[in-house]
Length: 488
Image 1 (cartoon, helix red, strand yellow):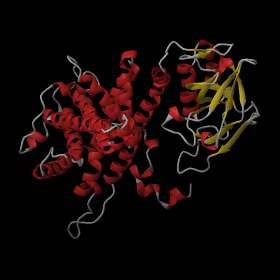
Image 2: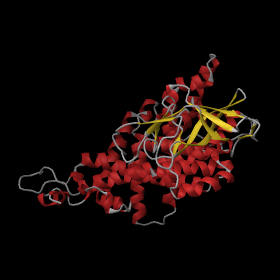
Image 3: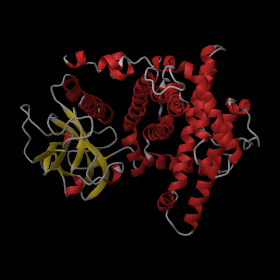
Image 4: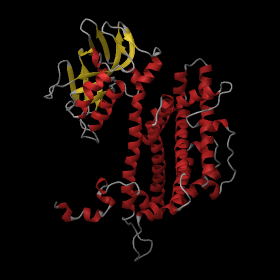
């Protein structure tokens, strides 16, 4: 509820509103005198914010906005804090002024009184029991011609005058929508970063357990073998550990991008945050958005005297990397080779994606339909972009260290992450690696896992996760499950 109230609702007032809203609402929000939620998602529209169906009109006679849920698919759905607690909400809706739809805008609406009673013309229902996060009361909201004051429109991007004129310094609807959604980047950054934190907790538990749990003896009368001493167990856990370290460097880079953001860097932050969120949380829909941005960057770079600049695509201005026909341990563990081979995949897939989309357009298809029809290449390209960008942050972080044992261990983690990326099916599917080299990569991964095994505990301990956040199996799981513990 804290996230829904402070980050989503409070953040929306901070970024979408102006001084009037800050003065009136933020202090009460911080002090929990009002409890808020963030009503964007609808039953019929989640990722496609532009398609939401809730409608708001303006009544110039009373100086009020009128919010209405026109159909069942327009109900606000899965809204954190709405079912039981929230007294106010940020409502996202289509703003219709004098018969003209001005696109998605946000308003503040009260949904409960101070005693927790649902306000007139508001209907609220609980979304029900969930697999997890049942401490948050996700709910559904219907608005039946709910009236709110004109001043409740969050107007940092656009406003409506008392006599009903729509006002905005940004005349282009697409640019206005982009400016309106720009503050939501913080949500993607938070989701991506939190996904890394969750990965750290899970791995800290799994690796600690694997360092204390034994199973089977190799010889009679010998001690049973620790789980993490089995190569198969190393192969399952240690590449994930390397990936989590890589994602951690990527998350730190993303946080710095956001903290130091400028109007000029908003596009880069949008693409990188979308890419990392998708990679860290397995969201293919976000990957498609990344591919669209890369397509636009590619087309822009085809203009005379225009080079690739931004999004990390500067390698497209250089000659195409050449992969050795035979890969050795030295080559496979070289950071330059690792960057080259990931750049090669990204470069080739971007060329293929642009060619396929252009071919569809040449047949009369719209660009949007061409993107959808090329979704398989789009997914491969989005993953290639993210893998390369994450490795780049890892290499840059590693380069800041002087030669030492820590740098050696980070080098192993970096190599394990990079080689694990090479096991992606695209490397064989598109011919970047031969079958023989793919087999060499697999053997090298097994070797690195074995070399990392002695450092596993130190690596997860370095996450700095308090013991209280880890489950009992991360420590003395026998005592934790003893009869005496069961009596408490």
